[in-house]
Image 1: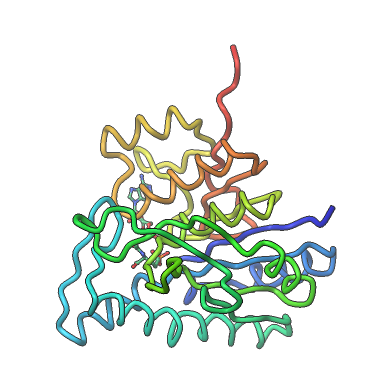
Image 2: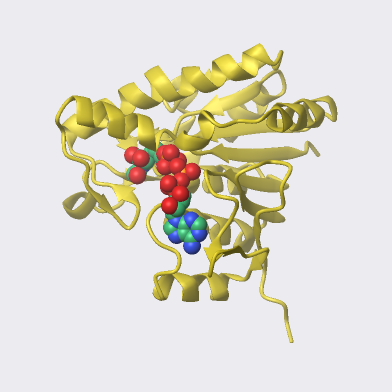
Amino acid sequence: MTKLIVIKIGGQAISQLSAAFFEQIAQWYQQHYQILIVHGGGPMINRLMTQCAVPVHKVNGLRVTDAATLSLTKLALLGDAQPALLAQLTQHQLPVLGLNAADNQLLTGELIDYQQLGYVGRLTSVNRVQLIQLLTQRIGVLAPLALTATGQWLNVNADMAATVLAQQLHAEKLVLLTDVPGIMHHGNVMTSLSPQQAQQLIRTAVITAGMQPKVQAAIAAIQTGVKQAVITNAIDQPGTAIIQEVAV
Ligand SMILES: Nc1ncnc2c1ncn2[C@@H]1O[C@H](COP(=O)(O)OP(=O)(O)O)[C@@H](O)[C@H]1O
Ligand SMILES: CC(=O)N[C@@H](CCC(=O)OP(=O)(O)O)C(=O)O
């Protein structure tokens, strides 16, 4: 069976990728891993919204997305974040393919709660056959957008998108690459966390903002068959591993 790794790169992390990152990707590629990168672009979307005087609102780390915000989100993800990442990978002689929901119906989604969040979606299906086929030749770089069955674009949190993709493609590993070295508590990086411990840190507001959907995504991944889910700022650093509860 093909071995596959899903890596989510946050918008901030796109501009902070180290030499070690590209070396690791090249090594996995040479070892015949299929690699799917799901990119974010939160800072790029924020910047464009500010330039266009559209206010930014978030609920539990998710961007409230009205029609104007959706247009700017598509522009920032497909016109800024994705090409910035593709250019860096190409400079490092890695064969890449930029992808989005509209290519071969790769990602289909549905609204989460239009009243509260507007055009924010969750993935309902992934064109697995097409994606696996595409990944035999290139490293896929996929934007966190989906289309509904009736053709409405949806803004999907990139951590949540990466998780569903890791589940559906039976990935061995999910790496959530962000701008902090892992989940911090009392100034330290937690090396590992069970879902129960992570939920407790969310309830007590130790884990807040964008770290909330990230942790929920990592929990969902390991509870649905992905062997490893890691939150880190460097692919060669252990960061925080979300691990199954140890039976006592
Ligand atoms: N307990 C925590 N540990 C680490 N980061 C946290 C924590 N709680 C909230 N955060 C915030 O979560 C941010 C990462 O989420 P986000 O900005 O959405 O990243 P990304 O763009 O990589 O998805 C961190 O920069 C930090 O500000
Ligand atoms: C619904 C929702 O919040 N979507 C995200 C999509 C981009 C993203 O997730 O980017 P980062 O990984 O850089 O945070 C957003 O609009 O910011």
